[in-house]
Structures are given as C-alpha cells and as structure tokens.
Length: 114
Length: 110
Image 1 (tube, one colour):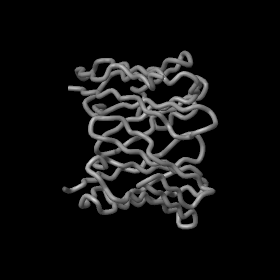
Image 2: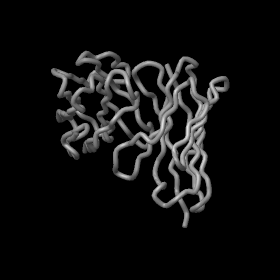
Image 3: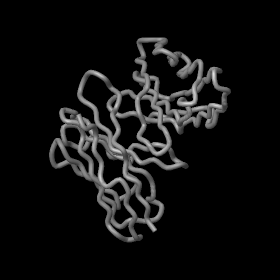
Image 4: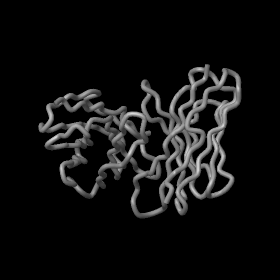
C-alpha cells in the first residue's frame, strides 16, 4: 500500500494566484480529511468527506478556500486567490469506516505564498 | 465544539528518564483519544490510542491513561531514548473528526 499520496510536496506561489493541492487516499478508505498546520494554530481541521460527500466544512477559513472529491480516489483543496497568511503545511488524511479510528496522514504540501 | 488543551508546550528530559504529557478535553461525549508523533519535516503518525471504555493502555515504553470524569488524559514515555525527540499531539474525537491539541515538543537530552 502506497499510503496517502499528496502533491505537490512543495509549492511556492505569488499572492493572488490560484493554488491547487491534491490528495489520493488509501484505497478502501472512505473518509478523507484536510488539515492545515501552522506554528501558531497547530493542526486545524478544514473539511472532511465521507463517501465523497463533504460532511463538515466549518473549518474552512473563508470563501477563498474550496475542496472537492469527485471520486473515491481523488480530492483537491483549492485556494483562490492565495494570500501570504495561507502559508502552511497542508495535510490530507484518510481512514476506513469501522475498525481503527486513527487516521493515516499523507506527507503534506508545504505552501509558501510570497 | 471540542477543544483540546495540551501541556507542556515544550519538555526536556534526560535520556533514560520518563516524560509525561497531559491533555484535557471539553466535550464529555468524546470517546476516542489518539496520540500522534511528528518528527521534524515528517507527517504525524499514530503511536497509541485509547477509547473511552478503557482507563489505561500500554504498548512497550508508552502508556496512556484516561480520566473521563475529569476529562483528562495523559501520555507516559518511560526509559526515553534519543529517537523519542519529536512533537507529540494529543487529540479527541466524538464522531468522525479528530480535534488536536497544540502539541508538545519533547527534547531528549544526552
């Protein structure tokens, strides 16, 4: 199993540009979570999906952020337009229904907005 | 919603000594409490977890305790080793989502 796969690993973009982060969950995992990690705020839950349906997006900071899961093996997190305060590490995580409740995290995308 | 407080934010212990990290949670309905370890530049990884119907769980040198009445839970690491140096996160969950504490940076001193 390749684990949760995120791309890109690093992204540097200019303020105002659109940024798209990608995630492939572990096959068979029907829950997918997007987290943002910063020194000040720690690990914040942005949104999560179950069976490709968004269940809770209350953590999405503002309308500039959007997330989709068009199928069971792919999700995107988009920021448009990006701002310097969006600089953070964005993690995707997944888990199956039932069984172990702990997540498996991807390697993260380090986003820098200049 | 759930709020998880974690202390201390930084902890330094001599190699071979024990380390204890403490957390509190606010939602009495939370029923799952995982602990994650994150090494520098790496992803958080689950190291141990406990459910609300259990008061204590041990796995080799690490153990977790849970006091549901007080809404406290703790991580204990015995016989610390250099490879234990990392950031440790406690977390609480009642449904599908996991809410994390702010983390404890653990330094193991030679």
